[in-house]
Length: 312
Image 1: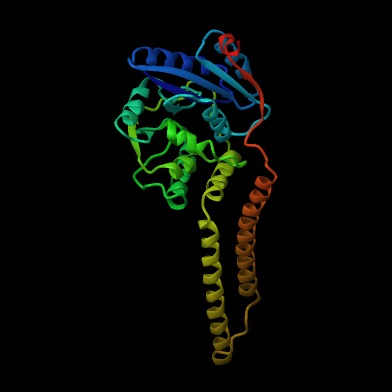
Image 2 (image 1 turned 90 degrees about the horizontal axis):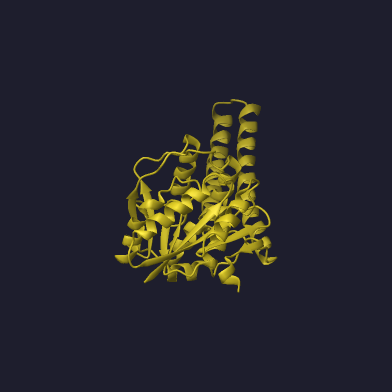
């Protein structure tokens, strides 16, 4: 019998997480040959999420709760959950019910058929326009910077085999990026089509600042392509500046047109902005290296909640 581990990062989900857990239990009861466990990671949610998790753990033998000391983000919560799992397959999904737990059989089936990792693909996403834009940008970044295949759709609803998990949890730097870790471990990744539900309660926990942090984390954690792009940009603008300088000199002596202050200032402001952008990018890399050298943790666990039978 194969053990399936479910990892669910939780944030502001006091009204939804119990429904998701019940759906997992009901679905797994209909699938022969599988047992399951559920890891719930509370990312320092300001509502009663941790109280609901404790109640769920008390009423079930196969649920474990983890409570963070502060908010570390979804990817850190996933890493904490992955390190707690024991399953042959690990399935990660959201806490809001939009990722259909009753279709987990499609993901498990793809893993049984030989895939190392499987991502749910939605024909019609029910996220907000802002969240869909964030997903689009995340897709493009993973494609161009992390080498994600163009036809592979990545989402927060995915499953991986045990050996992939073992490789992922070796990553101990302060800025985990789960998609990059999966792509680093294997290229045998497939999609399965599932339905995407509308959000019934609350709103997405992803703000603009969190999405920006996610994008920056993605392209600085596993790729140096931004630095190479910056080098190419510098070479291009230096060459363009040289050509423009020659043009200005020739124009001055042949046409006798005075050099304009406005054009000079526009070029200076534009080039100054490019330089600051590139310096900021380099600083981001250096800053993350410094934080990693100081052994900053991916997360800090305040409490681990287990059923009584597990702690005896």
